[in-house]
Length: 204
Ligand SMILES: [Zn+2]
Image (tube, rainbow, N blue to C red; front, side, top):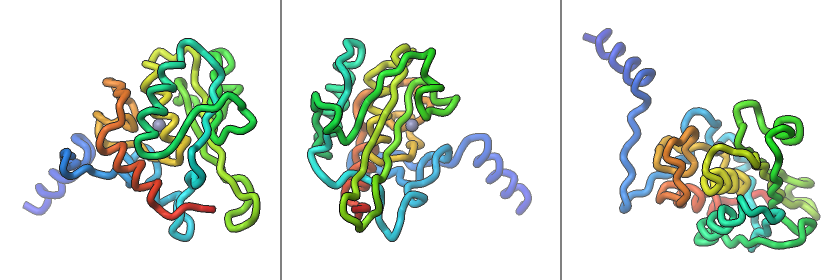
């Protein structure tokens, strides 16, 4: 009987996946622990603090590109409901830079890994926390020939550049990795998890 139980548990874990609870409008679920293909947010914690922006609005620069314009507009609108963020036209003043890179140059010109063929993003500390001049910058790279909907790719990578480095276990979320639905609107879980980061103590 005990062996059967262990067998069932192993079967459930490896073949079906861990049984995640179903989020509802009343009880949004935070995917702070990620979906297994990313380290959990706690991996990025230092003295109880997380790397995120602390000065608002966050300033974003993207060169004009007809393919990506409405995708950026959508992403900024989605995020600004929780985190003040806006586009600027001077790249030197940007907190987050968006680079549009052709597929031929993509792997050589970006830090994206081989499986990150559509885009990738980083958030980086500049200087040392607690010292004058400490700041945070984000950078995201988008494949100009992505086969995926630009609205989904840009929003997903922008959330990473804001410091949310985990993937969601829920396929209806923008931050689910390997999504076939390509949602372009942040779900309740996406918003609750981003809110968690932007109310957590930050490096500064
Ligand atoms: Zn991702």
